[in-house]
Length: 354
Image (cartoon, rainbow, N blue to C red; front, side, top):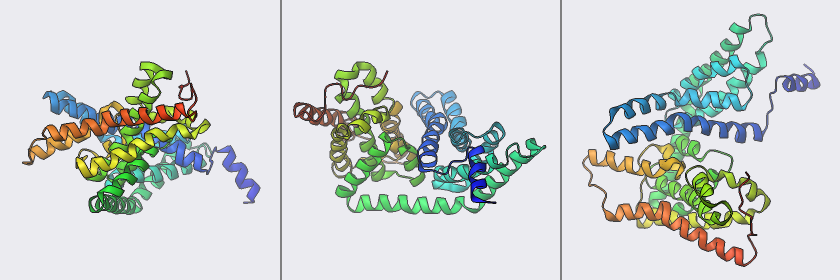
């Protein structure tokens, strides 16, 4: 097929091979799929554990069990997949997440993109579309899941294991690096939660990641209070700091205060408080969104106590509060105030769009 014919075919099928489509649009949608399944399920099961009401545990377990399908369908939606392709991705997501093990979310991302684009390519090209399109999507996606997902899972596990090992070996510098990098990923239009889930970041590395994410969310919420008031505190502090991306693109210096905060709280989490996030790995990349991050730390404490570990004391609770809430707020506000006085952050420079 001539090159111009291939280009025309891809354009007609809305298949766009680009960083924007795959690394930003698909990954951002995947994060919403995680929110709507694994994360809300984690919150509900934690509520059930705290309250003793089994109803929440049951509903939360249902939500967590469909994480793979939810992520895959979300990815297909971002890639503008036709209906039959979109619905078929549920099976693909389940297979990729199950076969991917610790790297399940990463496997879902890669395989759902491939299956979606293949399904789009054959969609409405035959008179038996209702058979051909789901057959191609499911066969290609599940086949890739069986053949590729275990390798992706092994790679993610090894990378995540290396990061956790490096953090324990050199908690100061690795605490800074993990905290800053994962915190930046949380604010970017990509998924820090998906990254942490894919890499299986828990333990000290998970604590450093949590510190960085909290620094971004709490930092932006507090330092932009004069522009956005309480609505901004709630939308950024309990929602997402990604809302500031427009202001960051216009004036990157506004990103400095929360990054400084994450560079401080990360090593404090690893070196001083030995803060370990031993709940679900996805919670390491959530920060204060729905309080999933701190809840993940508490979930790890509960699991540890059930295994015979000592209950957390005042020092552990103080460390959690300082790393996740107090220090990000104070440091970001202080740095932002200095930068405002120096004219580096303009009045209204942190205003959220209505």
